[in-house]
Length: 82
Image 1 (cartoon, rainbow, N blue to C red):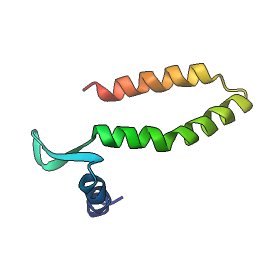
Image 2: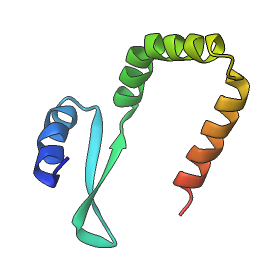
Image 3: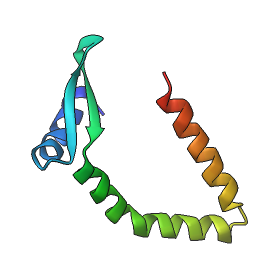
């Protein structure tokens, strides 16, 4: 997505209190986007059916879901650390 498209997509989310957009203190032209508590709740509520379907598909394919979860959590930790 282009920068303007991302900005347009974020505006309604910000207006509805689902995300918070701030200026990056290290780079004035860059913006940081974070989920608000309301955004996190909306994500978990909307994501639950998708999560269940994905988990079921992984198990049906013979992929060990616990391993997938461990790998995903580790990846999230690595991405979160700077």
